Image (cartoon, rainbow over all chains, first blue to last red; front, top):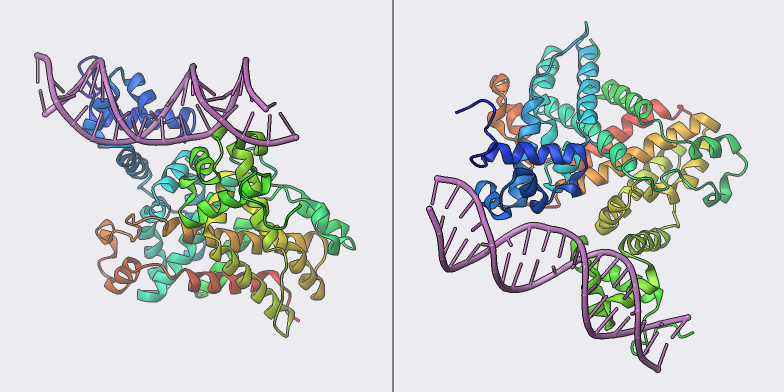
Length: 209
Length: 209
DNA sequence: ACCTGAACACCGTTCAAGT
DNA sequence: ACCTGAACACCGTTCAAGT
């Protein structure tokens, strides 16, 4: 088997998935159509079906491939608490850097699966602070949901040019606090909101050591 | 103008939106096609375009209509903290009761707009504990993101029969904590996770009184 | 002002037929 | 084992034409 798949002879399952990922990364999810994909591969539409089944199965393969690429996790920080914070920030950043992955996972209901590679690393840190079993699972779940939902919300919010900034005319009750109204009209600082909530979560979840 | 729009003579903008909402509620978002909508209305496909513009504009109208239906908020609880908790839980429940709204809002990038009707009520409670201006805005944003993301994640997670339960074979590092592995393999208790994180958030955000 | 049919440029998927 | 063209049953949208 040649490292770089030859272009001419035909199409492999891998080349289909790779090309599909490239199409999505260079454009967006809705740019991924079977016909365009086949055109880019230089084959008939129907041969794709032989290799990957159908569109849903193809997207599943794409998600798996992208997740496999980010399986290794490195941790920094002195205390376990610092390492957990670093882990969560790092994971948020990684998902953030792969916005296409989020859209893909959403379409296939694999949103939570995006977090799986991080669970082992988190469990290790929780063990270090004496959390095991069910308690550790609850903590992992809480952090997992926080990271994933943060990225999902931010990405879908800024996906289009829609009026996501809240409409100030909607609150007659707030006219006595113009500073609040102004602050709500400003764009959301997702990063800050993420950090605050993460810290609050850790205060609650991770025992002080 | 008759209260209940007459069926025979023609189609109104309202009847288009209402029928579209009914279609989505009885099925799901992808059941909403212009052709099916027109069939259900008894008109030609093209007349819909005259009334609402195009599909995107129609979905916008649907979101606005659904949000208008849940604009009034009632609060219960003695202390401000209890009332804020009640508000967040109530809002989560309302969004939860309208899963179609979430899918609709997602398609039109109006995810955060779903929360808008609740902002005024939240601001009132924060004023009661002495939070104003920028601090109050940060608190509102934090609670807003928590509620919305909680519902979004849970709904997309259970949208389909996909394998959302995490695969236990993926963590060789965890074999020394079988209770943790078992707990992670079990379905997520979103309600509990929501309450824990909400409490943690409030500890951080709302000043003790 | 409102509604129509015809047409355009797309989709995903199946299937029998080729080599 | 792999690839093909033709066909089916859909999409959203435009546009000229009707009343």
